[in-house]
Image 1 (cartoon, each protein chain N blue to C red):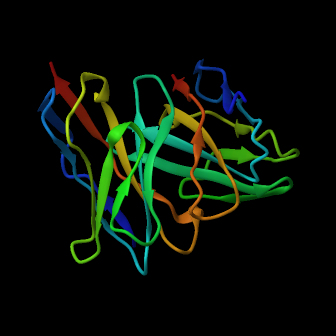
Image 2 (cartoon, rainbow over the protein chains, first blue to last red):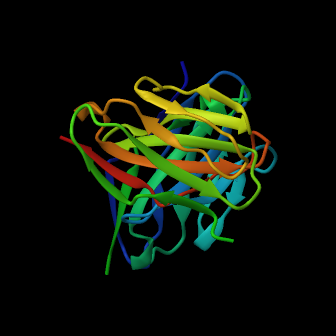
Length: 114
Length: 113
């Protein structure tokens, strides 16, 4: 069975410092990987995705993620955190079998401290 | 474009009551889905549709019904609400491909007493 792990419930980082939100996955075959962000009382918003090709993916709001096949990881990163980045972040994996098999992680709360 | 809209934003039901959560999208997307979000569990797929007249079950379909009579609308029906269905419900839509981005509605927060 496929799975997605976000090992940290919460990540605290000082404004201006680099941030990393971790995601590891387990799936058969080559997955499609997504990161979404959720602000309070809002729906999820797409940040970035890895389908194939370059392992470093750049997305919205200055975020990027690195796909590491050997470590089955897809960590979300940003060089310099903003207070406005404080939100809940979800990693999702879709097997090549399709969206009906999508699995979301439990989410990581990012708190950027002024 | 309004994107994906959901109504109501909040709802309180008593056990055994029925209700319909509405979802509409104006992006002409073929695929629509319903998820529930529970603390510590991420999002779980309830039902999905690949086009008008076609629906299928996701990971947690029990207690919910869906229909898709038009491309735009994808309502979720709770036939007899239970406290276990207390959750935040999100509707999402996307184009056809498996790599396409999903667009989520703002959610409906449902409490079943």
